[in-house]
Image 1: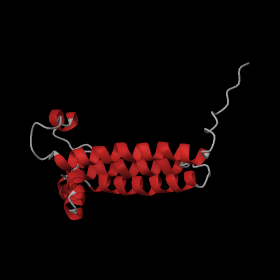
Image 2 (image 1 turned 90 degrees about the vertical axis):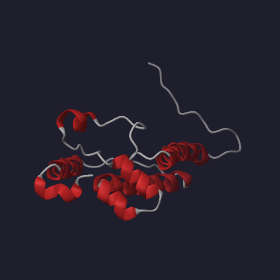
Image 3 (image 1 turned 180 degrees about the vertical axis):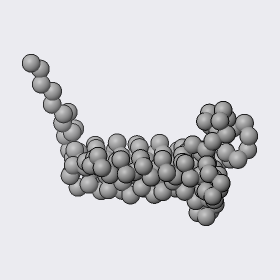
Length: 145
């Protein structure tokens, strides 16, 4: 039976900095995506593909309006961003908190395990499903993009 060991950090460099490079890489990729969305307005047709669910059924998926919300958020318009897709804006905030925890724990040499109990995951899925259904009903028009 073969066993594998994690690669040791290069001499003179702590393992925490090596692991922090992964977190910084993730942040860089997300920041690059936000910069692109900030520069290329998703409200202008032809720049991004259409949502297939909206295109074929006329129903808003949970992500509809997310790019427009990211564009508004990148330009400092929080109210507009929430109006485009409140769930996406909440997701951006959760990402910021989780990334900060990940980065600080990694720098301190601690393990970061963001696993949630199944009941919490089911509750989050239920909230996202309710958001999707409500935004497609007449009384939930305020949640539609």
